Length: 231
Image (cartoon, rainbow, N blue to C red):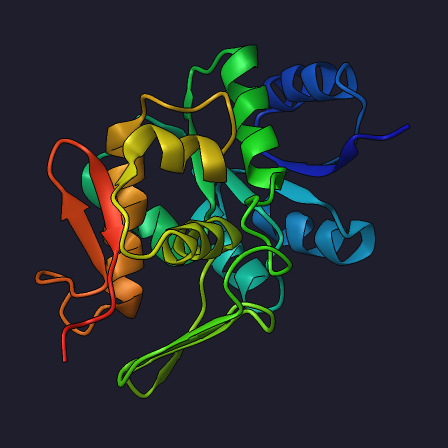
């Protein structure tokens, strides 16, 4: 039984071979593409459950390919990259990536990131909040629609799960480890810098003033708390 369908996009044949060996060994069904242009064609035909996408490719690069996929699909996208700087991490998230794996990577880390990207938060629409509404923020968790100010906001699947979990615990400080394990899974827990990048990007999308957040508040040395603005 297949564990899921993964589209591997990388211009280096050796990297594709290594990834295929690792992933087929874990019962994933694999299709490969060596360019962004080929990836878009394979994506439409293969309809993968996840895209593993190299950042640096000739022609259409990983960021542009990610943006094009995001125009029509919420499929999880994991970027393969050399160790990114802070601004590059934000750029990856801006393009719609759910996660990134730095090269060189180990098998355990790669598989953990893939499982995390495919995983859904336990705060599902059936058990979590159905909606949140304030003067400048409306969230419909069942329809997966968000309006911030006068704009409709599109979140990646992981950004949406992170926001949903925070809202499900509204008013309570949520520790870093709890957030990471609730949204990304048991393989996570100590990646506070990683979580900070996602929180920063989420604030950028939903907060009226991201530098002075009123919804996603920082609990120093603990974690984060979702709070409705004070009237």
